[in-house]
Image (cartoon, rainbow, N blue to C red; front, top):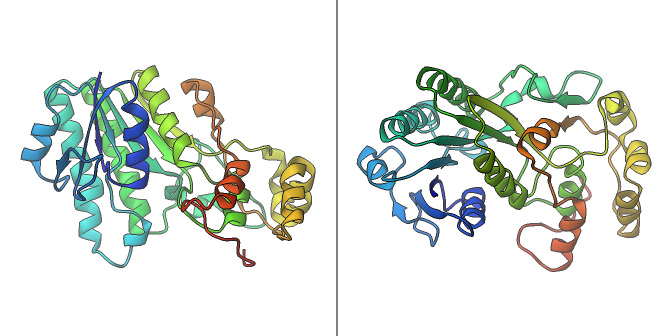
Length: 293
């Protein structure tokens, strides 16, 4: 099967490209020259896209402006790249007979809805987003556009909303693997599972680390998060104590990826232990611990 990955020079796009190339014919497109970018250019270049999409069965669309771009580029640029370019790519996919479109989105788009007052948010696919920034708004609108295209042209489209996934201090990253973070390798595996399943219609899934908590924990996560971690994740609590790391009192949200696990047959593998392993082995994916939460 031939697969096109957009944004293939980015951290997540590159991880997806490398994962998929083990079993598929993969080509990538990115504006940054890279070993995983077979086509170099702007995602808005329709001629380049038409060339890259030739004989492609599946498109994985990761290319986008992200949260760090907020305030550095105009709102119009967010609309041009995150919304309009996504729409054109999906319509080109329909025209070229692509069989499946996988869109890499973000849990950040839930915005204010993910952090209700006085309690930790339990965020699943039923939560209605309340965006904070143009980045959030652009990703929400891109999902809406894709849903319309899927329904109109009967194109299977799978949206994977990935949670926090970037290098940061080890203690934060390790803790977030229980609540609101994900390893790039698990993101790549989720994309591989979505492609293998190729479920019909428009589907949306949260992709985040496996949590030991449940929805009944939300109040205590917010008020006494350190005690709850000791109860539900005692090994992590011990590892933190052994490293003289402090557990935070408040944990403000949990991203629930159980639907993706159920329907896609996907299971996150890289929990907090992998963060500590990367730290101890000097991987650039993780930063030294910080005393500030």
